[in-house]
Length: 368
Picture (cartoon, rainbow, N blue to C red):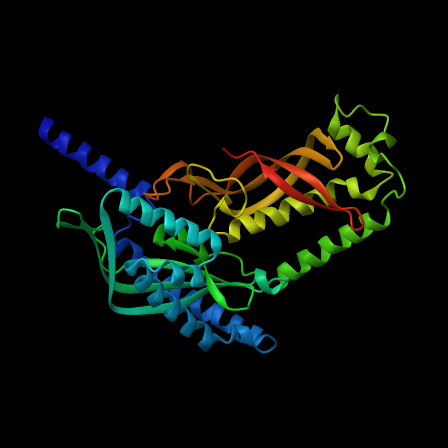
């Protein structure tokens, strides 16, 4: 009985270790969603074809060819450590992530070699047609048969710890400055499964942006002009209750309305989600990869006035979303839940960026 219990506990520990990582899902488990992916691809394919009627950059066949080319080119460039090619086809944030991984292998005297045996098969499972060409994204569920192994300095070789030879990945493409589709995010099967159920962002995004622009337009028109120190227009002490001071000032100057501050936070969170779930697109480089998806702002509270010239506030944003931290090397989830939305509070520094339009910009975040 003791032996049976020991073996059962060892199996549970091993299973827990496998489940905690986002890149250690077995082929069998990863492919359980194949039928769901086919249904999703049919839905998204129809949406993309409709978008292509007015925007030829969404031509479905061209997108699928591009996804295949990017996938195969990326594998060759990774294996050959061709940094020039990787820099060309990956977003700056993702390129930095891959470079870190290559350096990690090199520090251990190892080289990761990836050979495509067959495939890839690409399925278009998500699309976001947003305001601004640079904000458009498409996501492909990609499968291929790979010979993925590590060559060590002593001549021995190792294989993926999950034993996978037919992995599932989700590759999100985004347009670069030249309007070409490049890779902005790569998610393994478990982490990327949300693309099969995400709300499709087409008309909804435009509606949100129209509403935001309306908020900023009103704020710009109601801003107090020709005042050397607009913060002095309230009698509420900034050092005692900055949130109350902002509320009082917003009656006179629409740029300080909470709705205007929320626009800045929302846009920052969307950019965060589009950059491989990483804050590396900012000056913040966290030890672990900090992922935020599907974030909705519930409220913004001004905690303190940081600077009067330029005007900078420290704010706390109450959100609801998928938030978790991942080991950059192993992709193991260290904190949080990669599959469940939950309430979270994050701190940001907001600066009044353009006094003519009343817009604010996130210039710092408190995530450690």
